[in-house]
Image (cartoon, rainbow, N blue to C red; front, side, top):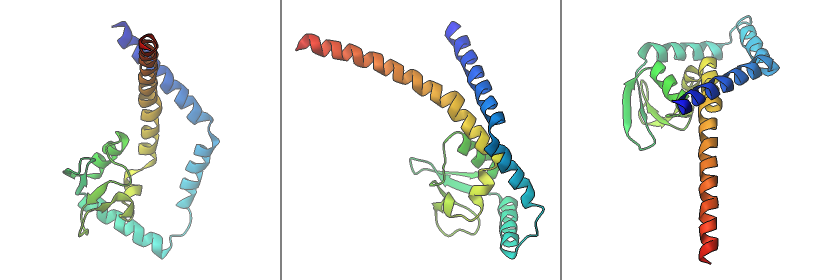
Length: 160
């Protein structure tokens, strides 16, 4: 149980540090200010067509994707795709099929789909997952491997 409590405390500390970095980061504040100011301007015809396509995507909201083993998954909605993005199951090169598509194509080639999946909330949660969960885990695995390598090198030195 002590190792479990240590992991939880370490995770909490990492999350607190990350949130402090976010609060201090002026680029993120500027990004949100620019994002809010976009809606004060007049909408061009191109932007209007993009909004219409986004409405169609959200209305139909049925997608299939191929995982890394090339297995078809779905049907799923945008919420499921967002969760898969946060967990690293899909990325911009993942093949999808959905309304209006004849064949499987990468998410990045479907107009406006990637912006529907990668909302600011999803981007923040993805960053938190990488910083608070994956990096500490990978660092612990690296330390274990380093210890194993030292043992292996000692054994090789004893043999030769």
